[in-house]
Image (cartoon, rainbow, N blue to C red; front, side, top):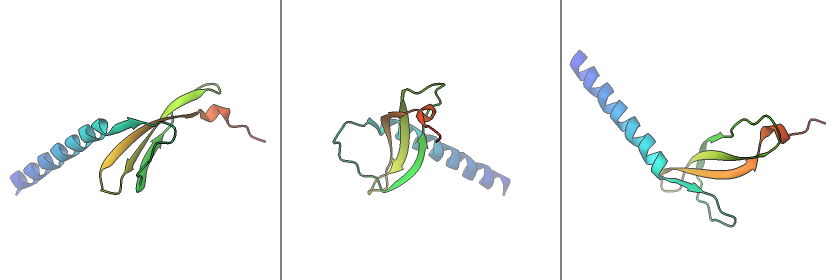
Length: 84
């Protein structure tokens, strides 16, 4: 029984490892006017900056074919937000 559990865990880890490699291969950089096929956004990562500047954010998403993809794009840092 324990051997079966160990084999199942090893298979799961191998699958997760391949998924993260596949995500790295499917990353594009956004260009103005680019057609996007986004079915579901999984995460958005915006790097922290101490002052108002443009940063490269990364979005991980699933397209209409079910493939996990990544998109790098330029955006303003959160430091640019003005509380009013």
